[in-house]
Amino acid sequence: MRPLDEKETAAVFEKLFKFTGPNLKHIVERPAVEGPDDPPGRYCFRLHKNRVYYASESLVRRSTNVSRARLAGIGTCIGKFTHHGSFRLTVQALDLLAAHARHKVWLKPTAEMSFLYGNSVLKSGLGRITDNVKSGDGVVVFSMTDVPLGFGVAARSTQDCRKAHADAIVVNHQADAGEYLRNEAEL
Image (tube, rainbow, N blue to C red; front, side):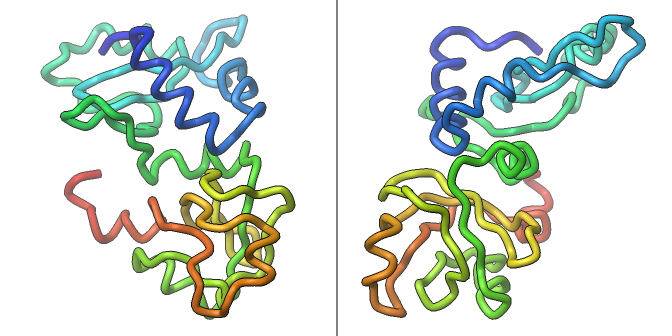
């Protein structure tokens, strides 16, 4: 386990900024609540076996007692680097993104299962959408009862969604809570 280098940090922060915007500073400067330390410390990002973990500094210090070969993971795995070096957010980052999301989409109850099976969000399944969403922005997908279901990339802006046909794709799927069942061995 090691800290991220400059290139890796830039890739992680760029991807997180796409979903959180200026709220990224709340993720980075968030005080830790775990550990016996009197000053609580902060959360940090660590790389282990091409996966990026979000963990408290106290937990990271204690994990140095475990050898790299035996360490499975630490904290929350928020994403992984592909073999080509690009960073990909995983579904485990959903709670972190949902708490700090800049753009949100709420689905009708009839469209929730379709999204959880890995399909993109259609206009007919869209319940609400935050204002000022542009095409290509990262959005977090919620149920109408504010339960985070996943995240994706907006295919249309908020204004274009109002004029779009009912079968038009509004949000392209990236990850959803159903991946815990579909990709159980990989997570």
